[in-house]
Amino acid sequence: MSVETPAQTAGTDGDAEVDRSWTGRSRRWLLKKLPPDKLLPNTQPSYVASWIYVFGMGALAALIFIIASGVVLSLNGPMWYHLSAFGHFVNSVHLWSVELFFVFMVVHLWGKFWMAAWRGHRALTWITGVFSFAVSIVAAFTGYLVQTNFDAQWIAFEAKDALNATGIGAWFNVANLGQMLMWHITLLPLAVIVIVAMHVILVRMHGVVPPLEADESDAQLRDAELGDALPRAEASSHHVEPESR
Image (cartoon, rainbow, N blue to C red; front, side, top):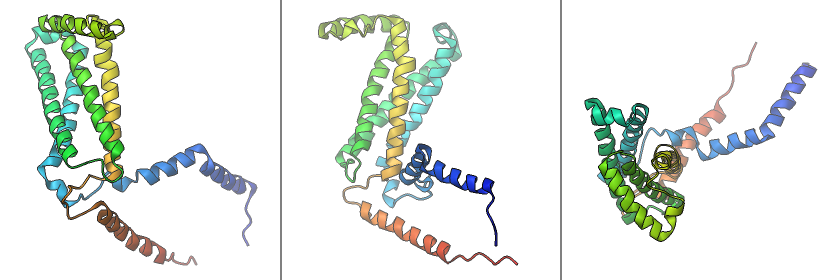
């Protein structure tokens, strides 16, 4: 007969206490809501092969180029991208990436709108997509204001008159380069990244929305996932550990 030592008993009690702690509850909640097979799936439904599903990933890829080129521009400063040929090229890449981002985003949003993408408990997914588009517009606007050229100056003072007429100009001064730099390279990019990350996680949690005429509905996909999980559970329950001699 084996006897537990006090150290073993303390360790067991400690494990149980950790499991009931807020970290243990948080870990179980995350594993339930975001299982690894949903975050990084090996397969997708057949309707994902449609071109309309490409534009979301296109917008995400363009956003990566925007962030990378923006970091390079901010590290080297306006003198570099105004006077250096390579700096001018990086500045152009930043602009082209922004334009592609909005093209992909508009097509993506319109496609999901006509597919009623808020179906199947996906309302928050749709809302985060709309918010990311709205915040990106403000980020692009502040980007035009920090070009440090004549266009930026003209846009700033034209916009200042409009914002002053609405009262917003009292705290959002578009003629203040330092304030616009703070918005463009710190606050707004952080907001876009957080909202887009939430959007992608929600897509993984609830799955890609099927078209209205899709053969595979949400219920069928859930049944298929459950059917795949049952054989694995049965196999694990029938697994017998060999006896130790």
